[in-house]
Amino acid sequence: MKSPKRHLIALAAALGVVAGAGAGYLVQAGREPKLPPLVQPPLPQARGPQPEPLTEALDRKVRNDGDLRELLLEKPSGAITPDWVQPQGWMNLYDYAGTWEDPEAADTFLEEQEFLRAAVTGWEVGGQEVQIWLAQFEQKKDVAAPANDSLSTREGAETDPHVESRPIPGTGDGKAYVHPERFHESGVDPYYWAEAHASRGDLSLHIWIYGDDPVPWSTIMDLAEQQMERL
Image 1 (cartoon, rainbow, N blue to C red):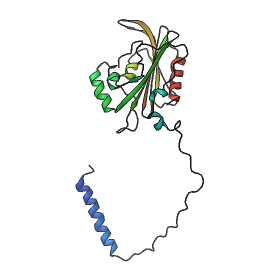
Image 2: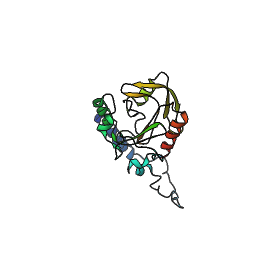
Image 3: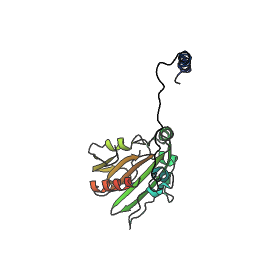
Image 4: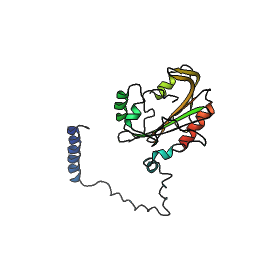
C-alpha cells in the first residue's frame, strides 16, 4: 500500500460405505437380540428464564451491517477535516485498491479476500494528521477478515529498519508501529509517523498518524485502543 500522503469426498467411496452399512443392517436384522433393549429415561426439559436476545448495541453482526461510519471515532473538537476525506466517508473497491502501488493486483487480491466496503475518516489537529480506515469483508468463504487485508500494510511498516512495534491489547495479533526517523518523500515535506493495524470479526482496521514531530507511543496506542473498543 502506498504511504498515504501525510496523508469430493469421492462418490464411489461414499456409495461403498452406504452399501456396506446397508448389508450389515440386513444381517443384524435377521438375528435374535442378545442384549436387553436399552431404556433411556426421558430427559428433563430446561426450565426457568431464557436469556434475553442481544440488543442491537451488543450484536456485532447487526451493528456491522448498519452504517459502518458510525463505528469510527469522532473528530476531536477543533480539528480540521483534510481534503482527502470524502464527504460521504466511504471508500469502494476501486478507491481502496487505488491506494496500493499496483492497483490492478490489489483489485484482484481484494476481490479474493471478499472485500465489501470501507469507511474512512481523518482530521488534522495539533500539528498532526490522523487517518482511520475501517475495511469490511463478506465472510462467505472465510470466517473473519484477513488479519492483514493488504499485502503491504504491516509488511510495509516492518520494512523500516528503525521501526518499533508493540501489540495492541485485546486485539490478538494487532500491532502498533512508531517510526522514529523522519520520512522523506518527493513533493511532500519530511514527516514523522506512526501506524496501527488490527482486525475483529469481519472488520480490519488501519490507522496512520503523521506529524512534524515524533509521534509518542501513547498517541497511537490510545487511538488504536479507543477505536477497537467501538468494534
